[in-house]
Length: 95
Image (cartoon, rainbow, N blue to C red; front, side):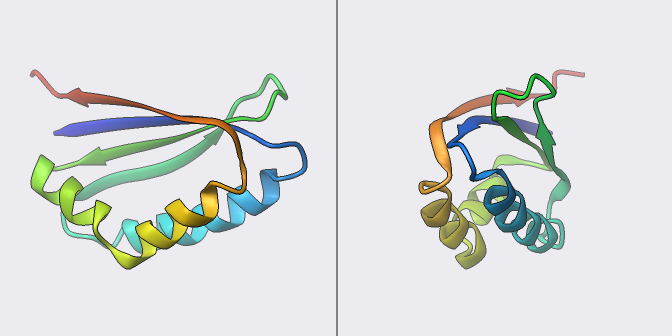
């Protein structure tokens, strides 16, 4: 199992744009082979922080996701929403 935490800080006024684009991405991603979980979370501090929390069956499934048209389109659009990031943290389940 592979877990990814993608952390970003949004530009002021871009939260809803990010949420809308990420909702579409998540809906399509959740249908991909090997996607166990794909969720978007907002930082409750009010400073514009967001994370995408992903779980993948294995690295091959994650690699396939990173090549999909919907991910690549989101990645291009997300640059206009971000103030900082993304900071990507990768984990592998050990037991």
